[in-house]
Image (tube, rainbow, N blue to C red; front, top):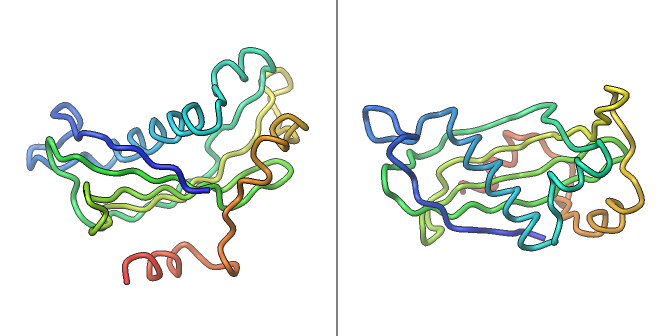
Length: 154
C-alpha cells in the first residue's frame, strides 16, 4: 500500500540557492511517514513506544537527489513498505513535484525494531504483524537501490 501527502517546502529548510537542503529531505520524508502511519493506519509511533518501550530506529538510508525541491514549492511525498521482516522493515519514500510528473528524490530506509529497555533489536510483536505484515508492497523481484532508481525515473 502506497500512502501520500502534500508538503510545502519552507524557507528555514532551504540553502542560499532556495533549494531544499540535502539533510532536510530526510526530515520531510520521516515526518511524512509518521503522518502516513497515523492517518492511513491509525498507528501512533510515539504512543506505541511509550506503551511498549519499543520502536523503529534508522539502520540505513540510501537516498538519490534527482531534481531540486524549491522554496515554497508544493511537493507530494509517497511512502511504501517494501519489506517486512522479523526484526526490520524497508520503506521506500519518493518526493515528487505537486502533479507527480517529476521525481525529486528517492529514499530507502531500513528501520530496525528496537527495544529501549534491553538496548537490542527486537522481534515485531503480533500487534505490529497484524497491522503491517499484510500491507507490504513487495517489488516483483529483489533489486538494488540503483536498479529501482532506473525503474522510477524512466
